[in-house]
Image (cartoon, rainbow, N blue to C red; front, side, top):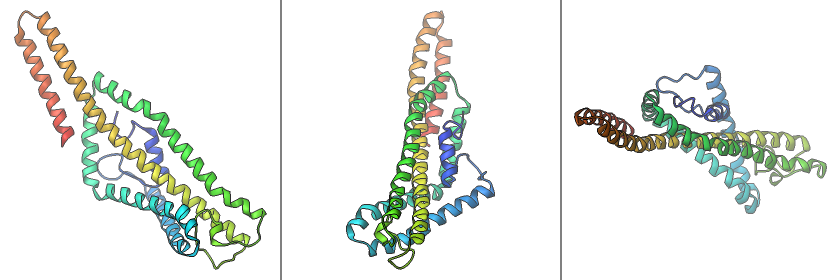
Length: 257
């Protein structure tokens, strides 16, 4: 077990979204192709914001408030969360390295704790990822129905207000703009979903270590009582208990720092 391989969805979401958040400690192991892909996706989101901002000014305030501001807020959240993780890359690397060291020294209690925490979350996270992607896709496809009803279009006809040319504009401009916004909104959700899954993964990893500490402490006292009853001398039992307690204290200190 290690930080990277405990949750395959976290890996797939991280790559597909182009976030490329650290999955291993040390130097980045992402290939040049993935890095170029990530840059293109970030440029796509930036371009969407550029066409969205004037669109918010040019459409009625109801449309801007309901559809436009949601996308702006989500993009701000994405840039902030991903930016914070990259800004504290050394801290994240150190955390991942410590977690991997703890997982490599696993015992039966650690395996049970990690399985108990991660397994129930697999289905909800997959549902969030798939259902969210499908919902955004369908939500962005609704404006395509207007093609059979109108021959000229305005900014508010897009799913989110955006400016690509002067209004009114033709069916061709409308279709190209909608396709761009569909792709942009899909990647916006993929990035948002990916960073959410990544943060949940981090929290569950830390939760597993604290739960392991509690269960290990209970197991030490239980086994110490059994050893003291089975052995005529309590010196060996006390020595074993002291050794286990010191190891557990080192584990807890590593989690804290």
